[in-house]
Length: 402
Image (cartoon, rainbow, N blue to C red; front, side):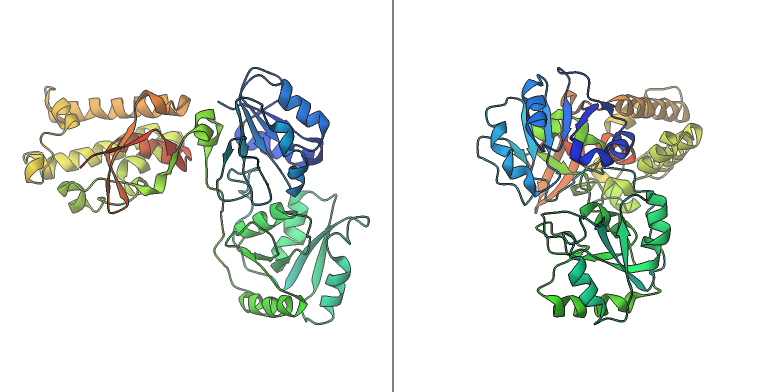
C-alpha cells in the first residue's frame, strides 16, 4: 500500500491537504511504495532514481515533458498519464482519462449553493498576473456587465470560498501554461460553477473558447444561471484503491459497471441488473462503518429475514433462494433466526477485514458478461463493502463463460 508521499517543492502548497485526505506520511522509507507528487528538477529525479520500492509518478503540470525521459530504465515505476505528457513507450503509464484521478485534498466544504452575479479570475500575484491574462481580462470587463473579481495568493481557502467562490457564477481562466488552474476549477465544479478555459483536460465543467467574442458569448450564456443552484461535478475516478500498487499495474473495472445478478428473487426485489449501492447490504455497511454497528447489522438481518419469509421454501430454480450457499449454511443451524444472526456476523467480519486492508488477489470477483454488461456471479458482499469504503474501481475481476 502507498502510505507515503514525496511532494516536489513547486507543489508544496498541496502537501498538507493531500496527506490529510489520504492519511499519508511524509517520505521516509526508500523501500516502501511511494507517491512522487510532481517532478520539477534534478532533485526530484534523483529521489525517484534512488528509491528502491514501487514509484507512482504524478506530474502536476505540462512541464513534465522536460523530465519524462529521465525516468527511462527505472524499475517498478508507473506514470499517471495526462494529456500534456509525451511518454516514451518504454515507460509504463496508467491513463485514467484525466489529470487528477484521485482527490488531492478534502473537497467537503465545496458544495452547491446559489450562484452569485460575479465572475472569478485567479491571477496569482503582481508578478504573475499577465501569465493569467490580466490585460485581456481588463479589456473583457469593458464589454460585459458582470464584475470580474480577481483572486490573489495568500488567502486561506475558507476566505477564498466566502469572498470569491460564493459570489460568482463562473470561473474565467486564461492561463495557457498547460493545465494551470485546474485546482480552482475543480473546487468551483464541486459548487456547480463551470470554468471557461482552454486545456487538454476535457472535464464536463470546462468550457473551451475560440476568441474574446466567444468568451463574451459564453459568459452571457452562463449568466442565465445566476441565482440558481446547479449540480456539482466530481471528475475523480478512483477512491482509496489508488493506494494499492497492484491497482496501477493491472486492468481495473469501474465498480458501477459490476451489476447485481439477475436471479428471479433479486428481480422481484428490484435489485437485479443495478449497481450494488442500491442493495440493502450496502446501506448496512454505510451505517456500520459510520460507527452505528448494531443498526447496520439489524438492517441486514431484516433484509435476509424478509427474503426467507418470501422465498425460503422455494428452490432457486423456481425463483426462490433455497439452494444458495448462504441459505444452506443458515439452514444448518437450530433455527432460521439463529442461522441468520450467524450469517450477519460473518458478513460484518468481512467488512472489518476489508476495511483493515483489501487484498484483491486472495479471491477474484466473478462476473458474467452479457451484451457488454457485467453481472456479478460471486462477490456481491465484497463490492458492497468496497462501495461503502469509497472505492470507485476494483481489480482481479474474472469473466465466467456462459
